[in-house]
Length: 380
Image 1: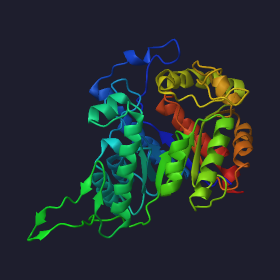
Image 2: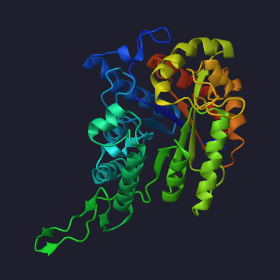
Image 3: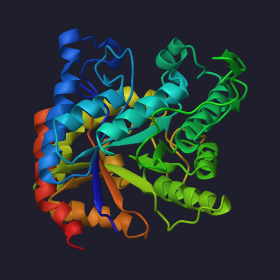
C-alpha cells in the first residue's frame, strides 16, 4: 500500500519555446544567471513539499549541461543546504554517479551530511549515462563492461567505508590503504572518520538492466523505477523480487522500491493532456536519445528493440502505458491504485516533474495533489 510520497526534480531551469516544434535540445544555450535558477527552484519546491506533507525530494547529479535540463552537480551539498531551508523533508540523491567520484570521498561527504542533518539525506548511486560527463571525468562509459567493473569495485569500497570499523581494500582500481609507512609503522588498514550515524546506510539505485538487478540484490541495494510502461514495470519489479530471493534477501513484491510516474491534474483527462503535452514532448526530445523510452508494444517488446516502435513517444502513449496519469483527482487515484494494488510490498510513489513544466505550474500541481490525491492513500 502506498504510504510515502516522493518527487523527482532532475534540475532543469524554466525552459522556453518547448515542445516538439520548439528549440532543438542541442541548440539550447543559457547564461550562468539562468542556469542558477535550478537552485531557486529546488529550494522553493522543497519548502512547499515540506509544508504539504511530502516525504522525500530526489535530485539528479549532472555536469556541463548548458542546455538547461539537468543543472545540479553535487547532491549531498544540495541536500545539506535544503535541510537548512526546511524542517522535516528528506533529500535523496538520484543519483551520485560513482564513476565520477572517489568512493571514500563520497562516503565521507555522505557521513557528514547524515550526521549534521540527523539522517535527512538519502544515499543513491548510479553508473552514469552521459558520455560528455563520465568520460570527461576520466572514467569509462562507452566501454560498458569497464564501467560496470569499475562501478562494482567502487561500490564494494563504499560499503566497507560505511560498514567496517577498519578495512583494507585491494582491487583492480584501488588499494586503500597502500602499504606505506606512517608514524613508524606500516599501514595495514584504515577507518573512515566519521562514519554515518544511521547504520546500515540505505543505498538506492535505478534499475537499468538484468545485470544491474542482480548486482543490486547481491549488495542489498534498494531500487527506483520511473516512467516505465506497466508491462516493463511489472517485469522489473518481479525480476528484482526474484533476484533478492536468490541472494537470501526475501522481500514482499514491491518492497524496497520506489515507483515513479508522471502526474498532471485537470478537470478532464483531455484537458490535462493538452496542458502537459508540450512539457512531456520537451522531456523526450532530451531523454529519448539516451534510450529512456521504457514502454512495451502489444507483444511485450521494449520500444527500440527489433520489431518494436523506435520513435519518440507521445503523451497519449504514456497515458495508455500507465507511465503518466492525467485528469481529475479521482481518476489519478484510481490509476495509481490500479498499479500499486498488484504489489503488496510497494509503499513508495514518486511524482516525476516533466522537464518542460514551469516551476509555477508544478507547484500548483503538487499543492492540488497533496490536497485531493494523497489523503486517499494516507487514510487507507
